[in-house]
Image (cartoon, rainbow, N blue to C red):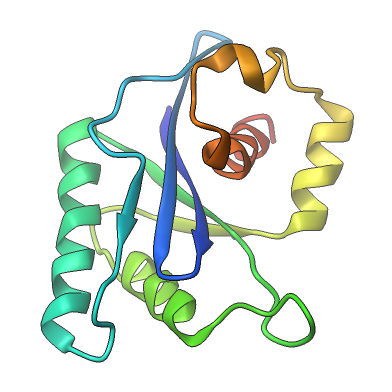
Length: 140
């Protein structure tokens, strides 16, 4: 199964592709590691963002999108642009989306520790949360 872990930070969706086949995890190459939503007040910009994600799903044959949940209230609450990004991703009709809470991710990592240290994956430092989110979904 090929999935894409997503962490939403500010006006960007940070991505990490992960594949699980025959019990082996693989991190396929991807042409982008983040997609930004600029000018979020324009419907055309939101549509372009959604099209970029949808095209990525089609091109890389992604079977599931997993978004790391962000709190709606409190000190670490997500911003309005982030929730627009989340909605645009969830409304892509060709690929199911799951929102995974931080507690669920921690619990799954505790039960199934990461098989490879993040530093040896070759991913960028800012992709770590997306990587862990994708892994936590696949080990469930």
